[in-house]
Image (cartoon, rainbow, N blue to C red; front, side, top):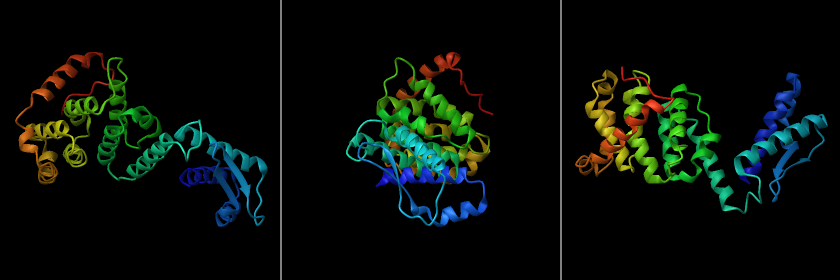
Length: 264
């Protein structure tokens, strides 16, 4: 099953880190199936030696099992069977999606996909933030900014509220982005968040008002992404909601420790 597969991968990596002799590492890789780690119905990671072709120190084997247990508990929770509880099945799905989006080459793509995941699973927002660490500095800064907003006592994690925040912060995301990547950012937001009307409208407005060279150079791709939303013309007729949200956020900027630098 999926969770046992995750446990095995974590345990095997831990064993490799524990082996110092390159020959031992090669031999271990050739006999991975001999070290069978799996998750029981109670959620406990167990170990079974299924072959005696290769033997390792018991301390190394147990250390790997402990690492796998810690990881499985962190990702899927502590209580009950990970296979039978729909809550843990949902977390497993989120983990798979995070793993897939982390493979995207551009951090603008990863950011847009992460926002999409949050919008689809708003009640898992902070769990997603805890599980995911991006390799890009810009994306990490945006995640920290969103976390600071969502943690406000008066903020309610609903799809509509999250969509409004992301839409209102599009200009901020733009100004935080590296000069030269802003056109790509607008394209990826428009492409991956096309079902969300307020966000698409905010991206369109930023695109129309921008005079950045890289935005102009990416204008064809941005327009193509925006054209994927058949209701775009209708969305442009009512900008009052986005205006109100952006004005509200502007009043809070002085208290926000992650206030972005002005647009270059």
